[in-house]
Length: 278
Image 1 (tube, helix red, strand yellow):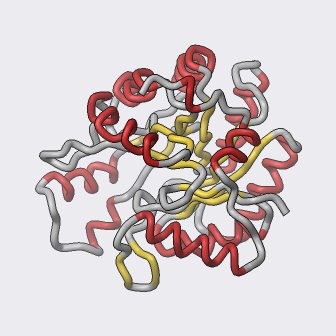
Image 2: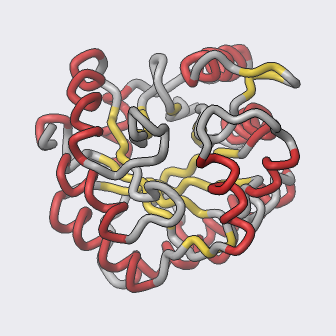
Image 3: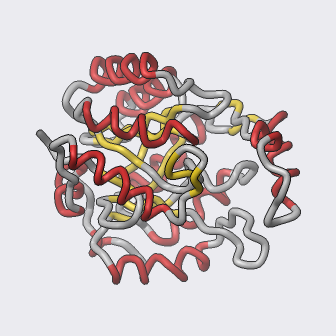
């Protein structure tokens, strides 16, 4: 049985990174913010650092690309389809906010399309993939997004092996139902054969169950506070690291092993940590 690639933090093989404005808490694309923590993380562990090009909802394509273009990481995330991205239902679940902008940000997504056109896909894949040798975490929020990845492959813009992240439980994308996971896995296998690695993330309460299912199916998994603030029913997590520790214990108790960063680099044919600019 192959070892599962696990992200984020706490002995994970891959760490997925965003930045926030230290004064306001808002998502922030400025490279200087990423450069405040990326060298420190790289100096403290051997994990693959994966920089977001999703940024924050409402950012332009150029803003979303800034940090990855400046740091030339081994990996970057890449959303592969436009979609309604509805996180406004959280307004009904919370009444206290850390920052004044948060309720308005959530409400904005009631009338918002997260734009990832074919022109956007081509631009970022060529800019980072061909220009920097960066490989992608292709984030697929629905079945059609798998076919968008296949289109990128058919154009010759993406080298194999590549990494597909199947995302479940976001309003506007595919629901967090096991039948959907099984079907997307089946379609991905039919499109990509044995030339890809696949992983699963699920929002909210579905995070740990779906991560466990992915491991049992021979795939990889992602957990972290970007996707869920909880570590158990009604129990807020103290950190992303705590979520990693929990899922690692589950996976290992089932007889599986966690991949090392070296194994992740080999399986994804990454350029190596000595070819980044941070």
